[in-house]
Length: 536
Image 1 (cartoon, rainbow, N blue to C red):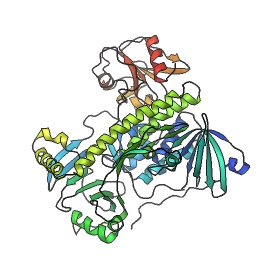
Image 2: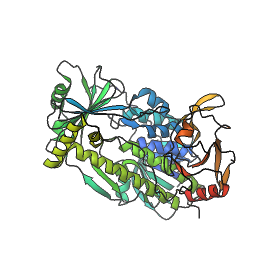
Image 3: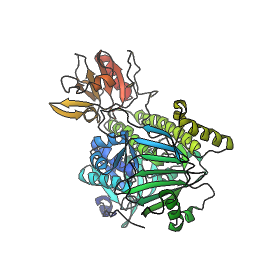
Image 4: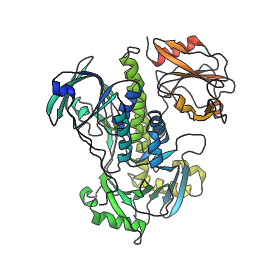
Protein backbone atom coordinates (compact mmCIF):
# COMPACT_ATOMS: atom_id res chain seq x y z
CA UNK A 1 0.00 0.00 0.00
CA UNK A 2 1.06 3.57 -0.69
CA UNK A 3 2.40 5.58 2.26
CA UNK A 4 1.85 9.33 1.86
CA UNK A 5 2.98 10.20 5.40
CA UNK A 6 6.43 9.91 6.98
CA UNK A 7 5.75 8.63 10.50
CA UNK A 8 8.00 10.28 13.11
CA UNK A 9 9.68 8.29 15.88
CA UNK A 10 10.01 10.11 19.19
CA UNK A 11 13.03 9.47 21.37
CA UNK A 12 12.72 7.49 24.56
CA UNK A 13 14.60 9.03 27.46
CA UNK A 14 15.03 7.67 30.94
CA UNK A 15 13.55 10.09 33.45
CA UNK A 16 15.64 11.55 36.24
CA UNK A 17 13.34 9.99 38.83
CA UNK A 18 13.81 6.49 37.41
CA UNK A 19 17.54 7.00 37.16
CA UNK A 20 17.85 8.20 40.75
CA UNK A 21 15.29 5.81 42.22
CA UNK A 22 13.52 8.77 43.84
CA UNK A 23 9.76 8.39 44.34
CA UNK A 24 8.39 11.62 42.91
CA UNK A 25 4.86 12.98 43.30
CA UNK A 26 3.36 14.82 40.30
CA UNK A 27 0.21 17.00 40.27
CA UNK A 28 -1.16 15.30 37.13
CA UNK A 29 -0.12 12.23 35.13
CA UNK A 30 -1.83 11.49 31.80
CA UNK A 31 -2.00 7.95 30.43
CA UNK A 32 -1.99 7.93 26.62
CA UNK A 33 -0.62 10.37 24.03
CA UNK A 34 -3.42 10.18 21.46
CA UNK A 35 -5.56 13.21 20.55
CA UNK A 36 -7.31 13.30 23.94
CA UNK A 37 -4.19 12.79 26.05
CA UNK A 38 -2.28 15.44 24.11
CA UNK A 39 -5.22 17.84 24.44
CA UNK A 40 -5.22 17.14 28.18
CA UNK A 41 -1.50 17.94 28.36
CA UNK A 42 -1.96 21.25 26.53
CA UNK A 43 -4.99 22.17 28.65
CA UNK A 44 -3.09 21.43 31.89
CA UNK A 45 -0.15 23.55 30.72
CA UNK A 46 -2.57 26.31 29.73
CA UNK A 47 -3.91 26.21 33.29
CA UNK A 48 -0.36 26.33 34.71
CA UNK A 49 -0.34 22.70 35.87
CA UNK A 50 2.91 20.70 35.41
CA UNK A 51 1.99 17.42 33.74
CA UNK A 52 3.63 14.12 32.77
CA UNK A 53 2.29 12.21 29.74
CA UNK A 54 3.01 8.47 29.51
CA UNK A 55 2.64 6.48 26.28
CA UNK A 56 3.76 2.91 25.60
CA UNK A 57 4.47 3.75 21.94
CA UNK A 58 6.76 6.33 20.33
CA UNK A 59 4.96 7.57 17.24
CA UNK A 60 1.63 8.99 16.12
CA UNK A 61 -1.39 6.86 15.22
CA UNK A 62 -0.99 4.53 12.25
CA UNK A 63 -3.58 5.20 9.55
CA UNK A 64 -5.86 8.21 9.33
CA UNK A 65 -8.35 6.85 11.94
CA UNK A 66 -10.44 9.79 13.18
CA UNK A 67 -10.71 12.31 10.36
CA UNK A 68 -13.63 14.72 11.06
CA UNK A 69 -13.17 17.52 13.57
CA UNK A 70 -16.04 19.83 14.41
CA UNK A 71 -16.19 23.55 15.10
CA UNK A 72 -16.30 23.30 18.91
CA UNK A 73 -13.15 21.14 19.31
CA UNK A 74 -11.40 23.45 16.84
CA UNK A 75 -12.34 26.40 19.07
CA UNK A 76 -10.87 24.55 22.07
CA UNK A 77 -7.67 23.73 20.19
CA UNK A 78 -7.50 27.36 19.05
CA UNK A 79 -7.45 28.43 22.70
CA UNK A 80 -4.61 25.94 23.23
CA UNK A 81 -2.62 27.29 20.29
CA UNK A 82 -2.79 24.35 17.87
CA UNK A 83 -5.84 24.93 15.66
CA UNK A 84 -4.17 27.08 12.99
CA UNK A 85 -2.02 24.32 11.39
CA UNK A 86 -4.96 21.91 11.63
CA UNK A 87 -7.31 24.26 9.75
CA UNK A 88 -4.59 25.20 7.26
CA UNK A 89 -3.77 21.56 6.46
CA UNK A 90 -7.28 20.17 6.79
CA UNK A 91 -10.11 20.19 4.28
CA UNK A 92 -12.84 22.58 5.45
CA UNK A 93 -16.41 21.70 4.55
CA UNK A 94 -19.97 22.34 5.67
CA UNK A 95 -22.26 20.76 3.03
CA UNK A 96 -23.38 17.14 3.20
CA UNK A 97 -25.44 15.20 0.68
CA UNK A 98 -27.44 12.01 1.23
CA UNK A 99 -28.33 9.77 -1.71
CA UNK A 100 -30.91 7.00 -1.92
CA UNK A 101 -29.96 4.61 -4.70
CA UNK A 102 -28.86 7.01 -7.47
CA UNK A 103 -30.92 10.09 -6.42
CA UNK A 104 -30.11 12.98 -4.08
CA UNK A 105 -32.53 12.67 -1.16
CA UNK A 106 -31.33 15.34 1.24
CA UNK A 107 -28.73 18.09 1.61
CA UNK A 108 -27.61 19.96 4.74
CA UNK A 109 -25.40 22.90 5.72
CA UNK A 110 -23.60 22.64 9.05
CA UNK A 111 -22.89 26.37 9.37
CA UNK A 112 -25.55 28.42 7.61
CA UNK A 113 -24.61 31.64 9.47
CA UNK A 114 -21.45 33.73 9.06
CA UNK A 115 -19.31 35.35 11.74
CA UNK A 116 -17.41 32.40 13.22
CA UNK A 117 -13.62 32.07 13.28
CA UNK A 118 -13.57 28.29 12.96
CA UNK A 119 -15.10 26.31 10.08
CA UNK A 120 -18.03 23.98 10.65
CA UNK A 121 -15.87 20.90 10.10
CA UNK A 122 -12.44 19.93 8.85
CA UNK A 123 -11.26 16.58 7.57
CA UNK A 124 -7.69 15.82 8.60
CA UNK A 125 -5.84 12.57 9.13
CA UNK A 126 -5.29 11.84 12.84
CA UNK A 127 -1.53 11.47 12.40
CA UNK A 128 -1.26 15.13 11.37
CA UNK A 129 -3.43 16.20 14.28
CA UNK A 130 -1.22 14.35 16.75
CA UNK A 131 1.98 15.60 15.13
CA UNK A 132 0.91 19.23 15.54
CA UNK A 133 -0.02 18.65 19.17
CA UNK A 134 3.23 16.80 19.95
CA UNK A 135 5.18 19.70 18.43
CA UNK A 136 3.32 22.17 20.65
CA UNK A 137 3.73 19.96 23.74
CA UNK A 138 7.48 19.86 23.16
CA UNK A 139 7.53 23.67 23.23
CA UNK A 140 5.79 23.77 26.61
CA UNK A 141 8.02 23.73 29.69
CA UNK A 142 5.21 22.36 31.88
CA UNK A 143 4.70 19.23 29.70
CA UNK A 144 6.93 16.18 30.13
CA UNK A 145 6.26 13.72 27.26
CA UNK A 146 7.58 10.26 28.08
CA UNK A 147 7.55 7.72 25.26
CA UNK A 148 7.92 3.96 25.78
CA UNK A 149 6.44 4.23 29.28
CA UNK A 150 3.84 1.53 29.93
CA UNK A 151 1.49 1.52 32.91
CA UNK A 152 1.67 -1.88 34.62
CA UNK A 153 -0.54 -1.24 37.65
CA UNK A 154 -2.16 1.51 39.65
CA UNK A 155 -3.19 1.75 43.29
CA UNK A 156 -4.62 4.67 45.20
CA UNK A 157 -5.72 6.01 48.55
CA UNK A 158 -7.85 9.05 49.36
CA UNK A 159 -5.33 11.64 48.16
CA UNK A 160 -2.74 9.94 45.95
CA UNK A 161 -2.34 7.41 43.15
CA UNK A 162 0.76 5.21 42.81
CA UNK A 163 1.69 4.03 39.32
CA UNK A 164 4.04 1.19 38.42
CA UNK A 165 5.69 2.01 35.08
CA UNK A 166 7.74 -0.16 32.73
CA UNK A 167 10.35 1.33 30.39
CA UNK A 168 13.23 -0.11 28.31
CA UNK A 169 15.36 0.52 31.42
CA UNK A 170 13.15 -1.48 33.78
CA UNK A 171 10.34 -0.78 36.21
CA UNK A 172 9.87 2.16 38.58
CA UNK A 173 7.13 3.80 40.66
CA UNK A 174 5.72 7.32 40.50
CA UNK A 175 2.93 9.12 42.34
CA UNK A 176 0.23 11.50 41.14
CA UNK A 177 -2.34 13.67 42.84
CA UNK A 178 -4.56 13.10 39.80
CA UNK A 179 -4.42 10.69 36.86
CA UNK A 180 -6.23 11.34 33.58
CA UNK A 181 -6.81 8.08 31.70
CA UNK A 182 -6.84 8.72 27.94
CA UNK A 183 -5.71 5.27 26.83
CA UNK A 184 -8.56 4.53 24.44
CA UNK A 185 -11.37 2.05 23.98
CA UNK A 186 -9.29 -0.87 25.28
CA UNK A 187 -8.09 1.13 28.28
CA UNK A 188 -5.82 -0.90 30.57
CA UNK A 189 -6.35 1.75 33.24
CA UNK A 190 -10.09 1.13 33.19
CA UNK A 191 -9.56 -2.63 33.49
CA UNK A 192 -7.15 -2.17 36.41
CA UNK A 193 -9.78 -0.19 38.31
CA UNK A 194 -12.68 -2.48 37.38
CA UNK A 195 -14.55 0.23 35.52
CA UNK A 196 -17.38 -1.46 33.61
CA UNK A 197 -19.08 -0.36 30.42
CA UNK A 198 -22.82 -0.39 29.89
CA UNK A 199 -24.36 -0.19 26.44
CA UNK A 200 -24.38 -2.31 23.32
CA UNK A 201 -22.25 -3.69 20.52
CA UNK A 202 -23.77 -3.45 17.06
CA UNK A 203 -23.91 -6.57 14.94
CA UNK A 204 -22.49 -5.07 11.78
CA UNK A 205 -19.12 -4.45 10.24
CA UNK A 206 -17.78 -1.60 8.13
CA UNK A 207 -14.73 -1.30 5.90
CA UNK A 208 -12.65 1.89 5.97
CA UNK A 209 -10.43 2.52 2.96
CA UNK A 210 -8.16 5.55 2.66
CA UNK A 211 -7.59 6.01 -1.05
CA UNK A 212 -5.10 8.33 -2.76
CA UNK A 213 -6.60 9.73 -5.97
CA UNK A 214 -7.02 12.98 -7.88
CA UNK A 215 -10.50 13.89 -9.07
CA UNK A 216 -12.91 16.78 -9.19
CA UNK A 217 -15.39 15.62 -6.54
CA UNK A 218 -16.47 18.62 -4.41
CA UNK A 219 -15.27 18.84 -0.79
CA UNK A 220 -18.56 17.63 0.65
CA UNK A 221 -19.67 14.65 2.70
CA UNK A 222 -21.53 12.15 0.47
CA UNK A 223 -23.49 9.29 2.00
CA UNK A 224 -25.38 6.64 0.01
CA UNK A 225 -28.17 4.33 1.09
CA UNK A 226 -28.52 1.27 -1.16
CA UNK A 227 -26.34 2.62 -3.99
CA UNK A 228 -26.16 0.81 -7.31
CA UNK A 229 -22.45 0.12 -6.71
CA UNK A 230 -23.06 -1.49 -3.28
CA UNK A 231 -26.60 -2.91 -3.24
CA UNK A 232 -28.57 -3.14 0.01
CA UNK A 233 -25.74 -1.54 1.99
CA UNK A 234 -24.44 1.98 2.64
CA UNK A 235 -21.32 3.90 1.64
CA UNK A 236 -19.60 7.15 2.59
CA UNK A 237 -17.10 9.38 0.77
CA UNK A 238 -15.25 12.49 1.88
CA UNK A 239 -11.91 14.14 1.26
CA UNK A 240 -8.86 14.48 3.50
CA UNK A 241 -5.54 16.24 2.96
CA UNK A 242 -2.92 15.17 0.38
CA UNK A 243 -5.56 13.88 -2.09
CA UNK A 244 -6.51 11.12 0.36
CA UNK A 245 -10.20 10.18 0.32
CA UNK A 246 -11.97 8.32 3.13
CA UNK A 247 -14.40 5.72 1.81
CA UNK A 248 -16.56 3.56 4.09
CA UNK A 249 -18.49 0.49 2.99
CA UNK A 250 -21.07 -1.31 5.08
CA UNK A 251 -20.19 -5.02 4.97
CA UNK A 252 -22.85 -6.73 7.04
CA UNK A 253 -22.41 -8.95 10.08
CA UNK A 254 -21.48 -12.06 8.09
CA UNK A 255 -18.38 -10.50 6.51
CA UNK A 256 -14.97 -11.96 7.26
CA UNK A 257 -13.07 -9.00 8.77
CA UNK A 258 -9.63 -10.30 7.78
CA UNK A 259 -10.60 -11.30 4.27
CA UNK A 260 -12.44 -8.03 3.67
CA UNK A 261 -9.24 -6.03 4.28
CA UNK A 262 -7.24 -7.80 1.56
CA UNK A 263 -6.51 -5.57 -1.46
CA UNK A 264 -7.91 -8.17 -3.86
CA UNK A 265 -11.29 -7.72 -2.14
CA UNK A 266 -11.12 -3.97 -1.50
CA UNK A 267 -10.07 -2.87 -4.98
CA UNK A 268 -13.10 -4.39 -6.81
CA UNK A 269 -15.42 -2.60 -4.34
CA UNK A 270 -13.69 0.69 -5.03
CA UNK A 271 -13.82 0.20 -8.79
CA UNK A 272 -17.55 -0.44 -8.62
CA UNK A 273 -17.92 2.89 -6.84
CA UNK A 274 -15.35 5.02 -8.67
CA UNK A 275 -15.35 3.42 -12.12
CA UNK A 276 -12.74 1.30 -13.89
CA UNK A 277 -11.05 4.35 -15.38
CA UNK A 278 -10.37 6.03 -12.00
CA UNK A 279 -6.75 5.72 -10.94
CA UNK A 280 -6.20 5.28 -7.20
CA UNK A 281 -3.92 3.64 -4.66
CA UNK A 282 -4.73 2.25 -1.23
CA UNK A 283 -3.08 3.96 1.73
CA UNK A 284 -4.80 2.28 4.68
CA UNK A 285 -7.57 -0.28 5.18
CA UNK A 286 -9.38 -1.35 8.35
CA UNK A 287 -12.56 -3.20 9.32
CA UNK A 288 -14.44 -2.19 12.44
CA UNK A 289 -17.33 -3.27 14.58
CA UNK A 290 -18.66 -0.50 16.78
CA UNK A 291 -20.24 -0.03 20.17
CA UNK A 292 -22.33 2.61 21.93
CA UNK A 293 -21.52 2.40 25.64
CA UNK A 294 -20.01 4.26 28.57
CA UNK A 295 -18.64 3.85 32.09
CA UNK A 296 -21.05 4.33 34.98
CA UNK A 297 -19.02 7.34 36.18
CA UNK A 298 -15.90 9.12 34.93
CA UNK A 299 -14.12 9.59 38.28
CA UNK A 300 -12.72 6.58 40.12
CA UNK A 301 -10.98 8.03 43.15
CA UNK A 302 -7.94 9.94 41.91
CA UNK A 303 -8.37 8.69 38.33
CA UNK A 304 -10.44 10.62 35.78
CA UNK A 305 -11.44 8.97 32.50
CA UNK A 306 -11.79 10.88 29.24
CA UNK A 307 -12.39 10.10 25.57
CA UNK A 308 -12.80 6.52 24.38
CA UNK A 309 -11.57 5.14 27.70
CA UNK A 310 -14.77 6.57 29.24
CA UNK A 311 -17.30 6.26 26.41
CA UNK A 312 -17.55 4.79 22.93
CA UNK A 313 -19.87 5.69 20.08
CA UNK A 314 -20.31 4.53 16.53
CA UNK A 315 -18.26 6.54 14.02
CA UNK A 316 -21.36 7.98 12.35
CA UNK A 317 -21.48 11.67 13.22
CA UNK A 318 -17.83 12.12 14.20
CA UNK A 319 -18.64 12.02 17.92
CA UNK A 320 -15.62 10.10 19.25
CA UNK A 321 -12.58 12.38 19.32
CA UNK A 322 -14.77 15.50 19.20
CA UNK A 323 -16.52 14.43 22.40
CA UNK A 324 -13.25 13.51 24.10
CA UNK A 325 -11.76 16.95 23.45
CA UNK A 326 -14.78 18.49 25.15
CA UNK A 327 -14.25 16.14 28.12
CA UNK A 328 -10.83 17.71 28.61
CA UNK A 329 -12.21 21.21 28.11
CA UNK A 330 -14.58 20.53 31.01
CA UNK A 331 -11.94 18.96 33.23
CA UNK A 332 -8.85 21.18 33.06
CA UNK A 333 -10.05 24.23 34.98
CA UNK A 334 -11.66 22.07 37.64
CA UNK A 335 -8.37 20.27 38.26
CA UNK A 336 -6.59 23.61 38.53
CA UNK A 337 -8.98 25.02 41.13
CA UNK A 338 -8.83 21.82 43.17
CA UNK A 339 -5.03 21.62 43.05
CA UNK A 340 -4.84 25.29 44.12
CA UNK A 341 -7.13 24.63 47.08
CA UNK A 342 -9.87 26.91 45.71
CA UNK A 343 -12.46 24.18 45.08
CA UNK A 344 -13.31 20.92 46.84
CA UNK A 345 -13.22 17.48 45.30
CA UNK A 346 -16.95 17.82 44.55
CA UNK A 347 -15.99 20.01 41.60
CA UNK A 348 -14.31 16.96 40.05
CA UNK A 349 -17.56 15.06 40.56
CA UNK A 350 -19.24 17.73 38.46
CA UNK A 351 -16.89 16.69 35.62
CA UNK A 352 -18.46 13.25 35.76
CA UNK A 353 -21.96 14.73 36.12
CA UNK A 354 -21.69 17.05 33.10
CA UNK A 355 -19.73 14.76 30.80
CA UNK A 356 -21.82 11.64 31.56
CA UNK A 357 -24.80 13.77 30.54
CA UNK A 358 -22.98 14.73 27.33
CA UNK A 359 -21.97 11.11 26.71
CA UNK A 360 -25.59 10.00 27.01
CA UNK A 361 -26.61 12.68 24.52
CA UNK A 362 -23.96 11.47 22.08
CA UNK A 363 -24.85 7.81 22.66
CA UNK A 364 -28.50 8.56 21.93
CA UNK A 365 -27.69 10.37 18.69
CA UNK A 366 -25.13 7.78 17.65
CA UNK A 367 -27.51 4.89 18.32
CA UNK A 368 -30.28 6.60 16.33
CA UNK A 369 -27.87 7.09 13.42
CA UNK A 370 -26.83 3.46 13.57
CA UNK A 371 -30.41 2.23 13.68
CA UNK A 372 -31.27 4.33 10.64
CA UNK A 373 -28.19 3.24 8.68
CA UNK A 374 -28.47 -0.44 9.62
CA UNK A 375 -32.18 -1.29 10.17
CA UNK A 376 -32.66 -4.28 12.48
CA UNK A 377 -36.03 -5.42 11.10
CA UNK A 378 -38.01 -5.46 7.88
CA UNK A 379 -40.42 -2.81 9.18
CA UNK A 380 -37.48 -0.53 10.15
CA UNK A 381 -36.07 -0.92 6.65
CA UNK A 382 -39.44 -0.06 5.07
CA UNK A 383 -39.72 3.05 7.28
CA UNK A 384 -36.19 4.18 6.45
CA UNK A 385 -36.61 3.75 2.70
CA UNK A 386 -39.94 5.60 2.80
CA UNK A 387 -38.30 8.52 4.64
CA UNK A 388 -35.53 8.68 2.04
CA UNK A 389 -38.00 8.66 -0.84
CA UNK A 390 -40.17 11.36 0.74
CA UNK A 391 -37.16 13.55 1.64
CA UNK A 392 -36.41 14.12 -2.03
CA UNK A 393 -39.52 16.27 -2.47
CA UNK A 394 -41.03 16.90 0.97
CA UNK A 395 -39.49 19.17 3.63
CA UNK A 396 -41.16 17.43 6.60
CA UNK A 397 -39.30 14.16 5.95
CA UNK A 398 -35.79 15.65 5.78
CA UNK A 399 -35.19 16.00 9.53
CA UNK A 400 -35.89 12.25 9.82
CA UNK A 401 -33.00 11.37 7.50
CA UNK A 402 -30.10 10.25 9.69
CA UNK A 403 -26.83 9.33 8.01
CA UNK A 404 -24.90 10.32 11.12
CA UNK A 405 -26.02 13.54 12.81
CA UNK A 406 -22.74 15.40 13.08
CA UNK A 407 -21.14 16.33 16.37
CA UNK A 408 -22.46 19.40 18.15
CA UNK A 409 -21.75 20.53 21.73
CA UNK A 410 -24.05 19.30 24.47
CA UNK A 411 -25.24 22.21 26.66
CA UNK A 412 -25.17 21.45 30.41
CA UNK A 413 -28.61 22.95 30.92
CA UNK A 414 -29.32 20.94 34.09
CA UNK A 415 -25.84 21.23 35.61
CA UNK A 416 -25.55 21.73 39.37
CA UNK A 417 -22.96 24.45 38.62
CA UNK A 418 -25.45 26.73 36.85
CA UNK A 419 -27.23 29.68 38.40
CA UNK A 420 -30.76 29.88 37.07
CA UNK A 421 -31.97 32.83 35.02
CA UNK A 422 -33.76 35.53 37.00
CA UNK A 423 -34.27 37.81 33.98
CA UNK A 424 -35.84 37.12 30.60
CA UNK A 425 -33.50 36.48 27.67
CA UNK A 426 -34.36 35.61 24.10
CA UNK A 427 -30.90 34.34 23.10
CA UNK A 428 -29.89 30.69 23.28
CA UNK A 429 -26.88 31.50 25.50
CA UNK A 430 -28.56 29.97 28.57
CA UNK A 431 -26.50 28.84 31.58
CA UNK A 432 -24.64 25.64 30.68
CA UNK A 433 -24.31 26.56 26.98
CA UNK A 434 -20.95 27.02 25.27
CA UNK A 435 -20.35 30.58 24.12
CA UNK A 436 -21.00 31.53 20.51
CA UNK A 437 -18.15 33.23 18.70
CA UNK A 438 -18.44 36.59 16.92
CA UNK A 439 -16.12 39.05 15.20
CA UNK A 440 -14.99 41.94 17.40
CA UNK A 441 -12.49 44.81 17.24
CA UNK A 442 -9.87 45.22 19.98
CA UNK A 443 -7.73 48.39 19.97
CA UNK A 444 -8.54 48.92 16.31
CA UNK A 445 -7.58 45.39 15.29
CA UNK A 446 -9.94 42.65 14.10
CA UNK A 447 -10.31 39.78 16.54
CA UNK A 448 -12.77 37.13 17.75
CA UNK A 449 -14.79 36.99 20.96
CA UNK A 450 -13.71 33.47 21.94
CA UNK A 451 -10.06 34.49 21.76
CA UNK A 452 -10.76 36.75 24.76
CA UNK A 453 -12.74 34.23 26.81
CA UNK A 454 -11.59 31.02 28.44
CA UNK A 455 -8.81 29.87 30.75
CA UNK A 456 -10.31 31.69 33.73
CA UNK A 457 -13.68 33.11 34.78
CA UNK A 458 -14.75 36.22 32.89
CA UNK A 459 -17.56 38.78 33.11
CA UNK A 460 -18.85 39.64 29.64
CA UNK A 461 -20.55 43.03 29.93
CA UNK A 462 -22.79 44.21 27.06
CA UNK A 463 -24.52 47.63 27.10
CA UNK A 464 -24.38 47.87 30.89
CA UNK A 465 -22.46 50.71 32.56
CA UNK A 466 -21.65 49.19 35.97
CA UNK A 467 -18.79 46.69 35.90
CA UNK A 468 -15.68 45.69 37.82
CA UNK A 469 -13.82 42.46 38.47
CA UNK A 470 -15.25 40.21 41.17
CA UNK A 471 -13.43 37.78 43.43
CA UNK A 472 -14.96 34.96 45.43
CA UNK A 473 -13.06 32.37 47.45
CA UNK A 474 -9.80 33.14 45.65
CA UNK A 475 -11.44 32.83 42.22
CA UNK A 476 -11.39 36.06 40.22
CA UNK A 477 -13.60 37.00 37.28
CA UNK A 478 -12.12 39.84 35.19
CA UNK A 479 -14.25 42.09 33.00
CA UNK A 480 -14.52 42.03 29.21
CA UNK A 481 -16.71 45.04 28.42
CA UNK A 482 -18.27 46.17 25.16
CA UNK A 483 -17.16 49.68 24.29
CA UNK A 484 -14.25 49.64 26.73
CA UNK A 485 -12.36 46.42 25.96
CA UNK A 486 -13.82 45.65 22.56
CA UNK A 487 -16.18 46.90 19.87
CA UNK A 488 -19.01 44.80 18.45
CA UNK A 489 -17.85 44.95 14.82
CA UNK A 490 -20.95 43.52 13.18
CA UNK A 491 -23.31 43.76 16.19
CA UNK A 492 -23.29 39.97 16.39
CA UNK A 493 -22.25 39.90 20.06
CA UNK A 494 -25.29 41.95 21.06
CA UNK A 495 -27.46 39.83 18.82
CA UNK A 496 -26.20 36.38 19.86
CA UNK A 497 -26.15 37.28 23.56
CA UNK A 498 -29.37 39.35 23.54
CA UNK A 499 -27.50 42.34 24.90
CA UNK A 500 -29.37 45.30 23.43
CA UNK A 501 -31.11 45.99 26.79
CA UNK A 502 -27.95 45.22 28.73
CA UNK A 503 -26.47 41.87 29.72
CA UNK A 504 -23.93 40.55 32.22
CA UNK A 505 -22.61 37.04 31.60
CA UNK A 506 -20.45 35.02 33.98
CA UNK A 507 -18.35 32.80 31.69
CA UNK A 508 -16.59 29.70 32.97
CA UNK A 509 -12.96 28.97 32.05
CA UNK A 510 -14.22 26.42 29.47
CA UNK A 511 -16.23 29.16 27.69
CA UNK A 512 -19.56 27.88 29.00
CA UNK A 513 -22.09 30.27 30.52
CA UNK A 514 -22.38 29.93 34.30
CA UNK A 515 -24.97 32.68 34.87
CA UNK A 516 -26.45 35.81 33.26
CA UNK A 517 -28.33 38.90 34.35
CA UNK A 518 -29.57 42.16 32.88
CA UNK A 519 -27.77 44.29 35.49
CA UNK A 520 -24.43 44.08 37.29
CA UNK A 521 -24.89 42.82 40.87
CA UNK A 522 -21.71 41.93 42.75
CA UNK A 523 -23.45 39.82 45.39
CA UNK A 524 -25.21 37.72 42.76
CA UNK A 525 -21.99 37.31 40.79
CA UNK A 526 -20.12 36.14 43.90
CA UNK A 527 -22.87 33.62 44.63
CA UNK A 528 -22.72 32.35 41.04
CA UNK A 529 -18.92 31.95 41.16
CA UNK A 530 -19.23 30.05 44.44
CA UNK A 531 -21.84 27.75 42.93
CA UNK A 532 -19.81 27.15 39.76
CA UNK A 533 -16.80 26.19 41.90
CA UNK A 534 -18.72 24.09 44.47
CA UNK A 535 -17.51 26.43 47.21
CA UNK A 536 -19.59 25.80 50.32
